[in-house]
Every structure is written in C-alpha cells, then in structure tokens.
Length: 638
Image (spheres, one colour):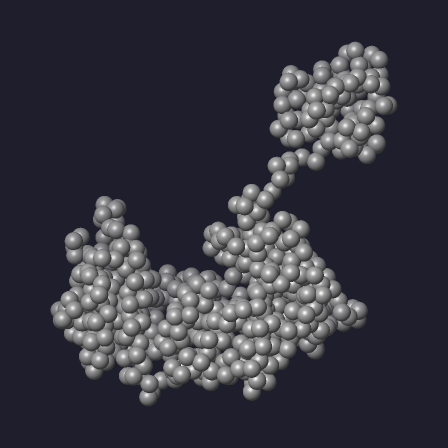
C-alpha cells in the first residue's frame, strides 16, 4: 500500500479523497464511488430488506440481535455489488463502502435526523455501533464483506453555530459546560442579569477564548481576544466610536497601511430586494457577493448566474471536463460520457438527462477545444475544470429556467455595477441612494453609514483608513446594522478586527432586547502580523528588570540579598542571582536578558559597606556607599 501511494501524484492522492474517484489506469487502480448507505438496510439500490429505523433498533437494547441485522444487510450489500459489477463498474449506492452506522450522540431534536442514530446514551450507542460494524464487515480475519464507515462528526447533531465550541459535562451532572467561545455572549448575560446598569453601558474585555478549529496560519484553538462594546444606544456615534477605537489601537501599535471596511446589513437586504432575488437564493447571493475581492466582478457574475442550478449536474460536468483535461475523454464523446453519469438524489440515483447531455455537449466542446489535454498542471485540474464549465451556464439556465428559481440575467447585470462602485465613500453612498431610493431598508442603511462617516471625520479618523465595501457580508445571521472588519495590507492572515451592531443578542438572555454595538481584536493575529513586518522593537520580549545583584561568593550571599531588598524598597526592579558562579557568566546572563545594570558586593565592598555598580550599556562603573547606590542607578536609567 505504501508503495502504491508513493507512486501516485499529488493530484491523484487528492482525488482519492472525493466521493467519485477516477481511475488511475497506469497503476491499475479502478474508478470507484464511495457512497453507499445502510443505516437500516441497503439504501437507494433497488429492492432490499428494510429494517426499523436505527433509533428503533436501539430500543431493543440487544447488541447480538443488532449484529444479526447488520449481517443480513451486508449479505445483500455484497450481492448488489456483484450484480452491479457484472453489468459494468459499480456506481452510486452499489459499492462496498457503506456510510453506516451513525454513532452521533443525539441530544438536540432540532437536528432533524435523530432517527438515524441510536439516541443520546453513549454506552448504548457504543454497544450498538460495535455490533453493527462487526455485522457489516464480517468476521474473516483477512477479507471484509463490506467497509463500515461510522458517521458523522462529533458535534454534527447540534446546532451548526456551536460546532466550534468545546463542550463537556462535569461530575455526572446534566448541566453542559463549554469553554468560552467569544466575549459577546458573556456580555449579553451580564447585561441581562443586571438590568439596572446605567445606559449606555460601555466596557472593554481582554480574555482568552477557545475554538474547536483546525489550527493554521491566523487560526488558533486558544487565543486572546479584546472586545470593546457599547450597550443601550441606537446612536451611530456609538458605532463610529467603536471604529475610532480600532483606528487608535492600530495606529498606536505602528500600523500605517490598513483599511477598516464598513458596510450595513440593511444595505445588503436592500440590494437583495432591488435585485428581486428569490428568498431561497438570498444566502447564495450574499455568499457570492462576499467573494468579490477574491474572484472579481466576472467571478461573482458567474456565481450568481449559476445560483440555483443543481449541484450534482454541475459536478458531473466538471468531472467530465477534468477527464478531458487528463486525456481520458475525447471531444467527440462528451455527450455520451455525460449521459453515462449518475446523479445522486434524495429519491435514489438517477441518470444524467440525455437531452441535457446533448444540449451541454456543444458549448462544452467549444470551451474545451481551446485547452489541449495534458496542458494543465495536475494540482490545477479540479479548479481549471470548475472555471471552464462556467461557459455552459447559459445552456443549463435554458434547460432549468422553467422549473427552478434562478436569478434573472437582467438582475445580475443591474446588481454588479452597484457592487463595483468606485470613488470616495460619500460619492458611492450618493450613487447607492439614487439607485436604491425605492427600497426603505436600503435607504435606512445608507443613512446610518453616512452618519458614521460624519462622526468618524469629527473623531479625527483619516478617511483613507475607512472604506465602504458593499460586497462585505460577514455575520449576517448575527449583525443587525453596521458591519466592519479591518484588513492589514500584505498580512495574509485575514481580518485582524471585526464587529458591528448586534441589537438582538441581549434579547436572547433577557426579557427585552437592547441595542448594542462592538468589535473584537484578535491579539494573536496582530502579533503574527507585527512579527512578519518586523514591528516589534528589539527590547520587546526582554526583561523589565533594571538591576542584577550578583552572587560573588557563598559567604557573601546574605549581604547581596539584603542590598537587593534595599534597592527594591527604593522603587527599582531588581533580580538576585542565586548561584555564585563565575562573574563573567553572570554578566553574560544580564546581557542576554537585557538587564542594564549589575551590582557587585565582593569581600572589599562587604567590609566597607559599599557596592560596585556597572552600567552595561555605557560601560561606566563606580564603587559607592550602598545608601547612595539607588540614586546613582536611577540617574543612569534616566
């Protein structure tokens, strides 16, 4: 196995991770589809024995019987695999890798898929899950009947908003405990618990937070966050003050090239109303719009035109395009290859519509003809195929236009100029007001943005550091008005601050809602950028100790310790060296730590109640009475 994997290219390895893996003919690896289901019987592969749902099977509390159920399922699964193989390569739902059992601990019915699980009891789930896996895979020590693939993610049955939260229980109690995810919810709870706090209530909070995230550049599982919030005011001055804090912090730290991007959720809602986008596609609209800085206007246009088209159909076309780029499909067989693809669906697999294959093959052939097979680097194949198939979007829209909700081309054409407005902030807002005057929600958002800009000018925030970004669509399920984030040029860590108005959050914990606005600064991200840019002075990270009292000899430790206490009483920051090693080594320690002054009490100094002090920065050295040493050292330091 190691030898086989070692001979694969990076792209070939990556494609083994997708559901529908292509063949690697040069290595004798066949194509394979990993998706088969068997939670309570072989699913979506024709007639099969159907057992009760998993949660009903769990009610048996009978692991041996569960083993027999899974054994019967695996017999049918293996038989269906052989039948499919006899008629060609196995495809969707006829392979030997079954996405079963579901061993989620089901504790929140809002997930909606509890019937797939064995309930909320961890012990019962473990016993039933083990029995099911053993029944599916068989007991042959060398050959498995099937491969059981237990699912899903550990927190998949909970609300998606909590998927990054570390959670635990304590002492067998029912109460769930979580590591602090952010500092906004604690704020909301405090305000709800103390309704008599004077309003507006303004606070800042610096503390660690935790995320069950995948660590990478700019992302940590534990990091410090600094929040600045104002609760109890609807005034846009509160929003402007929050943005002014961002500017002041970054400017004080030494940042010069940064921009605070601002937008308003109400303006985004108004853009959706202006575009007449169906409610079912609003999320896709905002997601596409948010990508404008990365993929450009044309990229957003293509995404909006493709919004609502069936993903399985687009995936199949992308797959065929990729196979062509690999030299495995010819231009003259595109229609036949597309028609042979299988599309997954809730009601089982379905063939790629033959009439759609014929319709798409022509424009796809024209697009691919300009890109010779083998001309694309292996690690770019998937992305390139995705970019190329955007050219068949008109054909797909023509095919599905009468049956699916799609964003009209005229709407896309009218929306894009608003997203790509250029000029200063006030000019862009004036243009938006003219275009969206008929949409009250958008106008309200524009009014708020104009007020924020006026207040920022009065607060002394330079306009070059504030940019209206109509495409920014962060936190729409959370923010209710202004939204903003800060980007440091050439930082490559994402935004270093983010925030906005969240007028509904406190209402989740109190009997009434209170307006609130705030922002968060990611401390570790700032540190990463400052380290990359060489912004820290050499002294950062070095000690704040001002004087090192050396240890000359064992019998002189007591006088040295007493002198260190005397200097501390005089207000100096002092460290005593513990071990009477060679003086040069103690001096080296002071230099390494950046301690500017050392004090030496040798036999002569001890006998005369004096001390020798040495300035390591200026190389000055004096022997003085111990009572006078503090004043001399302070004069040197000043």
